[in-house]
Each structure stands twice: as C-alpha cells, then as structure tokens.
Amino acid sequence: MDYLPLAFTKSNIKNTNMTDLADKKCIPCEGGIPSFNLEEIHKYLKKVDGWDVESKDKKDYYIIKNFDFNNFLESQKFVNKVGEIAEQEGHHPDIWFGWGYAKVKIQTHAINGLHESDFVLAAKIDKI
Image (cartoon, rainbow, N blue to C red):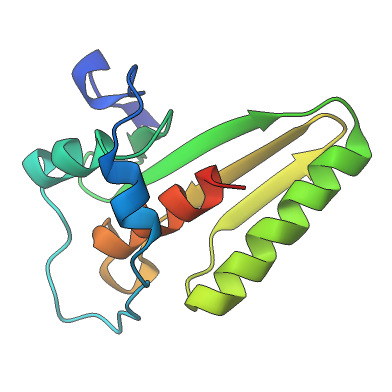
C-alpha cells in the first residue's frame, strides 16, 4: 500500500467548503468517466477533515479515515449511521469496526479511483 506525500494527507484545518460538500448529493457512477488526478484529489482533500489518500498501485486512489470511540456500542452506532447515509446516497464505502474504532474507505469502484461523490460522502460522514 502506497501513501501520498504529507502534502496529500490529513487536512490540518477544517475548511468551510466541507459544509458545501456535505450539502451535495452523491451522483451514481457507472464508469466511463476519468478518475481524479492528484491535483484534483489534493483540491478536494482540503475540503474534508482528516481523511488520508492511499493507493495500492499509485494510480487507483481511495480515501480512508480512522474513527475512535469509547466502546463497542459507540462504534456500532457510528457504523449504522454511516450505513444509513450510504443507502440514502447510493454510494457504499468499505467499513471495518470493533471495540472503540471504525475505519471507513471510500472509492468509486466503477472507475477504480476518486471523484467528487467520494468527497461528498466523506463530508457527510464527518457530520455524524
């Protein structure tokens, strides 16, 4: 798993644009469009809080974030809320969780990369 340089990782300042993203609707993607390049990823990464960008092969990027909780029940409640948002948006992340943690990975599978809807979903998750 490759990691992007620090400039492309966690945002240190919560940007007001995150609210703008959270107000948008995810648009279903069936492929046929290009995924974001690194410049576009960097622009959108500034609009969400604390998400990392990773890649398995330096071209198929995804965003991922770890969430910490005080116990299993809090983790489970969070994951259930993420699931509700995912169903409403028609955009489904990969989720792992257990006692005191949850991890969410978002990518547009149809294009093996990132597009605006991935960041929209991330912003909505951050509002939980």
